[in-house]
Image 1 (cartoon, each protein chain N blue to C red):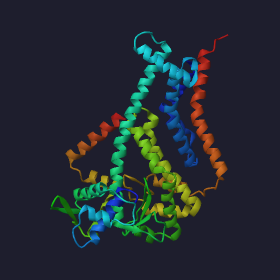
Image 2: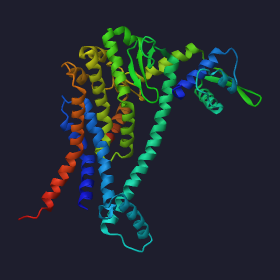
Image 3: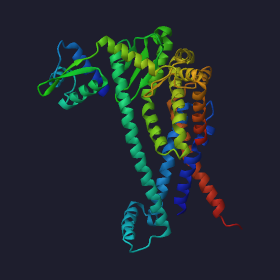
Length: 314
Length: 120
């Protein structure tokens, strides 16, 4: 019972306050990729802990999978009215019902949003295919719009592509244009479109949970910071700044991600300080530590609270 | 072939390069260099294009004959315009809308924003 309570309380704590904790833990100097990992861990761990807590409640004597199956069999007996469930089992069954209802709602919203997004994406890709030809001076995923307005964005999904305009290419130095391309490629290689679609679904399905509700807004900006970082590490901060200034004042199609994706002032300011290359091992270590801290902090907090409350006073 | 959008563009390409209206089967035969497609897939794509106004069709016996209703140049120009509309500065557009709103429209906007703020 104690383990179940700790897991459920930790899950609820993450869902209610996780966004504030992540914002507090990641200051302006934090690598955006680390903050993204913290968000993803929180988004998985919050609901995950709730589900695990309910599963533990349903496990007689916490007896593993076999126990869970026995418990499921026991539920059928209870439903038949032969034996009254224990208080623990009854709470577990109520929790399981709520979780199944929430999962069903998430599935319905996911189907609706994914279908709508795919339609918008298909139509946009059709327009891009009509309006452009592959730019053979670049790689095959780059499409060049023959227009003077500076445009740079990327479209995700199967066979992702980068769309840039002639105006952007002509208005920038080769390094700055390459930085713009690198920024958009970072969205594709980082699977940012997919990630944002998933958090949009969670936010639309369960807006009651502040963590899920706030995730799309924060992650939309964070992926722009992360793409800026990738571009700056390869082409230098000044090149990315030039590209950002060129696209500032334009917008990005709903189904796409792009350089003009928001907080341009802050991003320009951040690019003024040179970025340091971190070795892959160091970066992975940082991401792992941040992820572990995100998931373990609420657990430790709940265990501490439980010990303080339950500890008999001398 | 990556998705429906590219397939629609490829079908338009077939229709533009043909000097006469085509049946679904003929479009299917001319879609070369790609993995084989089902007849019904091409029929669905042509139906989409008809609904979007890019092709016109005429009955020929029990089937339809399809031909483009816009030239390649018109379609490209229209596509660029639609993409640029989507990449227009939405903040500026909203500011212009707010500045040009009449007093009753401004009140309605204010009312809507207040309601949204209260919901948060």
